[in-house]
Image 1: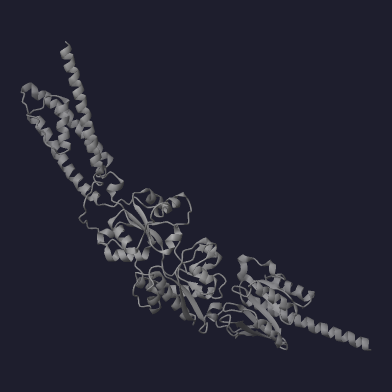
Image 2 (image 1 turned 90 degrees about the horizontal axis):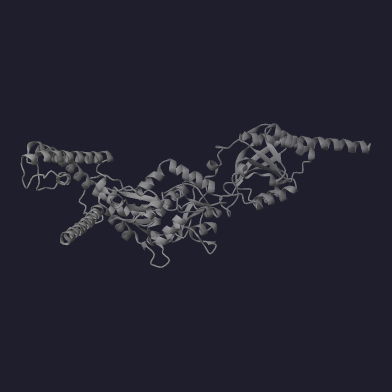
Length: 607
């Protein structure tokens, strides 16, 4: 009798356990399905028995959900799909939670479902020790028979208290009580927790005073840092966070194998985010990038050299076809004048008329082409008509040529569009005397960058670093390229350049980088909140308003009216070279004439 009673109790207990497992499995599958997104179930430390685990895997498979009992089966490219399952009623769950915590698996975008029987409240202390920070998506399901009550757990800060938020309940069907499914919308209240921003000071220590005041004074100095700070404060207000700030004097570069400046402050948790910085691959060891706030482009800024510096402007006014037409007309004029001169000398001879030689005809033609006078000329009507037509045609041509030369003498060349062309030009290269340029030009990428580096920082000689005032003034004078963040350069240009001097401004990139983005520590619990907040502030137009208020874009060429411009010897280089060739040729002809004269004189004396 006792034996039969024991068997009956075992059968009843087995039935109760099976019913319990079936309800739990049904709840887990419906919980995952309620998210309506691809999911991979990872469970560990369950004490449900092999049969119950197989039923869980089979039920998940029927719903298109892959299931695994190992933490090592995760795929990094599908982290957002993973749902972890733990049961605090099982002793093995403690080790499972500990291993997950050591691997930082309670962060975004992993999802967690933790089961707990309502009669086992003491085991909640395991969850209170876990770093469930602001973006952790963990749901605690407390079981009361077949009823599951769902609660979300998170802390607004590592040292903050645990916050519980009702999620819903399950009693055969799942009731979701979340006002929004997006985690950001439910967690964007940091309850006054402090967020610290590292602000870069490169130009002046006055930034320490003016940046916290947001008074838009001294915008010549560190305008990018000031825009980023105001933008961050707006984002902090969206998150109900208290803004704090620190100052760094360097963006962040490796010095003797150690990070320095802002990147180090972020890595050491002294700051949660920083001023926009350029995307360098090695910085990804410490930080990740969120969003563009203020354009921060490092470029060589210079005025295009005059056209006369890079081309022979005296050959540019006419196309090749026009020059060929002038040559053909000159030949025709020479031949015609030669024929008419042969006819004229048969009728009469005069000291001022053509003597019937091809040389005199060519001399008269060249005089017409160069708009010069000639003491010999035709004496009869046919020759004079030919001379008149040729001089008249060339006079109109000469007027057009002269007008084009005047314009071309003051025209920019637009010949420098790349770093290679800039390095090969006669333009002087220099850089702004700030910290980042010392590191940028030490990063030798290829022979071209090495040559630019050696030009600005020679091995033997004084480095070519100038302050912003001196550098912009040298840009205005021309043939000078200044490497800097372009915003302070353009602000100074707007104040000092004349309108016509802005028309030939050009940028050339040295580091070949994208725009700068806001750095945040890679494993920061606030990364996703800041990323979404920044995008929201940008989409509503605040970013555009701040940039217009704090920054100066590239100056526009409002008027292309030609102003007075002096002409130097370099502008007349082709003409001077031609004159030198002419002098050399005349001396050669003189020497040849002397030799011929001496030979004739010798022959006469000999005979």
